[in-house]
Amino acid sequence: MAALPLALALLTVAWPPPTRPAQDPPIANVRLDPGTRRLVWDERGNVSEVQCSVDQDTPMRVRGGSGFCQLHVVPACRPSTFTVAVTRGPRYAASFRHPELAGDPSAAPERLSCWVHDWDLLTCRWTEGRTAPKGAQYRLFWEDLQSRQVWECERYGGTHGGTHDSTHFQCEFRDVGRGHPEELQRFLVNGTGVPCAEIFVELGAIERLDAPNVTGSCNQTWADVQWHMAARFQSDFSYEVVVHRGSRSEKHTVSGPSPAGSQMLLPNPGNLRVRVRALTFDQRFWSPWSPLKSFECEPARAQVWVPATLSALGTLAALALLLWTCSRSPAARRLLPPVPRVKDPLGGDFQGEREVALEAEDRPEDCLVAEVQVVGEA
Ligand SMILES: *[C@@H]1O[C@H](CO)[C@@H](O)[C@H](O)[C@H]1NC(C)=O
Ligand SMILES: *[C@@H]1O[C@H](CO)[C@@H](O)[C@H](O)[C@H]1NC(C)=O
Ligand SMILES: *[C@@H]1O[C@H](CO)[C@@H](O)[C@H](O)[C@H]1NC(C)=O
Ligand SMILES: *[C@@H]1O[C@H](CO)[C@@H](O)[C@H](O)[C@H]1NC(C)=O
Image (cartoon, rainbow, N blue to C red; front, side):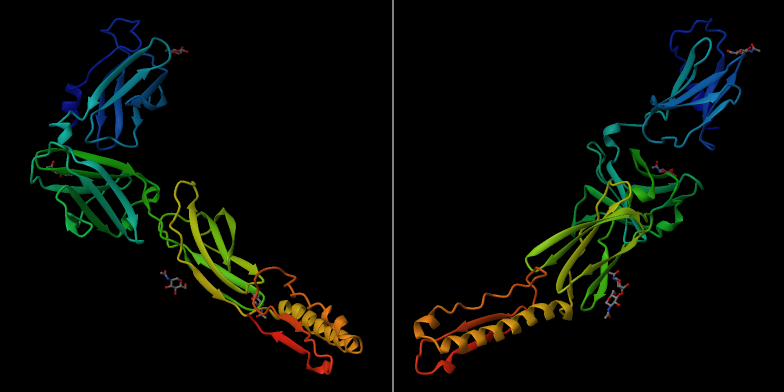
């Protein structure tokens, strides 16, 4: 029955100008079947190829004789132009507009947007149209375009940032699992005395990512950093990992697609702070950064051993030198250089570094008062 007004609204145009008499069109009775979302027509004569388009976007071609084009979406709020054209042989096109404009477009709700968050929730917000009547009551509907089920929103709210703001409206659905993730969803808001507004989206495309949950453990030699994404509709991510060691930081990219969780083994850990963020597979959205996660790893014995041994050897050598110089003149002792600071050969401001300093005091009467001072861990 809905097709009847559409058929009456049928507007036939020539595109390009018809080359056959207008009273003998190859296709006729172009109409929309909203139930099946099909653009339908009758063929008269030999039609070999037909092209359908909505608002001149993404035309689709079908063989003559099929009699319809399957549309993904049929807009309900904004008038669109549906065109069916014969593209082989004598050219001919027919088009009509649907739906008819109902009321003042500037009274329609604006900036309708919806997003999936916290795994299971879906929130939509919109603002009042500029010329919307004050006090208009709004309703929001969600339609799964695959199952064609329609749900009205359950939890309406008009507050924004804790303070009531009458020009903002929102509504929250629980259980986003009801929608088919691979199919477009329609969100439509309408109200008393205002035209409706709608958007068509896939759930995965409107899912707001939370920061990865970083966990892990470490021992003397390895830090095993793990993280996990709690995303409902997306599973392939790449990651950026920033590791802070003292004042230095290093950036790693774990390129994807990799699963919703991932892992990184960092050698020579010491004390680390790590944060991670995720990038969606289509590279369109970053998650927020995770909070900094600290890893307090014991210093690896292998790493301490090298400088400690060097320190011990250096101390022994210095003592031998000192004893040897004692038999010489005090002036010679003044030339005794301090053993240089022993650097961590593996690099880094690594704890357990030891510093050896020798102070040879100038006391000719007794060489043995020379102090050997081992400065402990900083
Ligand atoms: C229909 O048109 C096609 C090409 O436009 C042509 O090859 C075919 O012979 C025609 N068939 C009839 C029955 O006219
Ligand atoms: C809003 O849309 C719903 C679902 O399409 C419909 O049932 C309802 O009548 C509409 N309300 C208004 C005021 O247009
Ligand atoms: C992070 O992961 C750990 C271990 O799997 C879990 O115990 C914790 O509840 C998670 N935290 C969040 C905020 O998801
Ligand atoms: C240290 O951790 C790594 C990575 O988890 C593990 O493979 C290794 O066996 C551990 N070593 C010791 C001594 O526990």
